[in-house]
Image 1 (cartoon, protein in one colour):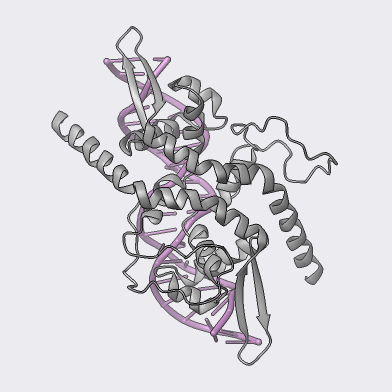
Image 2 (image 1 turned 45 degrees about the vertical axis):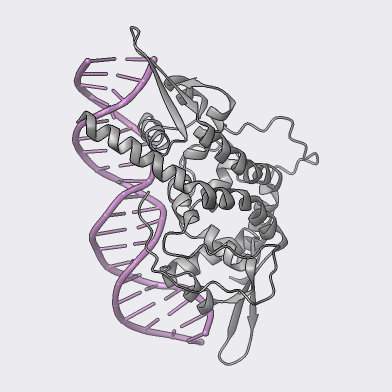
Length: 144
Length: 144
DNA sequence: CAGCATCCAGCGGGATACTG
DNA sequence: CAGTATCCCGCTGGATGCTG
């Protein structure tokens, strides 16, 4: 969502190189694709919106109701970013009142399915994480 | 890193036509695991650190050098969180000077492999995202 | 209904300095 | 080497109010 604060060495423009073959993508270089993805997908709401739209096309206020706790501002703002990124498509029907709905794009659906493994892991393993936390905190407490 | 703000919706049926290929998991429930995972993994550095440690055990300053742009504070802080979550193990050798190294745990390795699809997607598709952005911005500029 | 504009509290996170 | 401690700026994101 926010621009990276590291100095990105000239990655802002697509350098129009005809060959797209990346031999060894360095995940740790400042301008690596993974960082860029994280910078825009690892915020509070993007994944939730993407997941919701992955299930069905939805209108603005329906989304707002479905994703409880999201503010109008953040919904609007995040949808706009997702649209800009080509992950979500905005559809307007010029009726009165205007109807706007949002659909996931093929690119977005691709990303969502790539995220699915992570979501599945969370559902199966967050319990283990919580247990690890509890153990860690107990150890801390016993030391203090 | 903070607690979720959702209240329980209490409904989970999805009867509409799915665009993606999955029955939507209820990502919006009160104590949704995905939300919890995102709250702790979707920050700027966790995934990078996890990826690095997924390749090899590494000491503090080696990590710092490897992950370009990370500050000492954030490395220390994030490592501590990952350790608390049971995703990373901290190993201390009481020599002089002290040697500390970090290793990914089995749980962490599991998560990392769940994240791999996302990382792969980023490496293959961030170009498309950048293109979508450029197109979007061009459209905006032509309107204004 | 579907937003944009504004205000502002809170905290994420970088820079810097110091310790065992 | 492997951290802690502090300062502080800027962004995130909630609340509120207004528009077509």
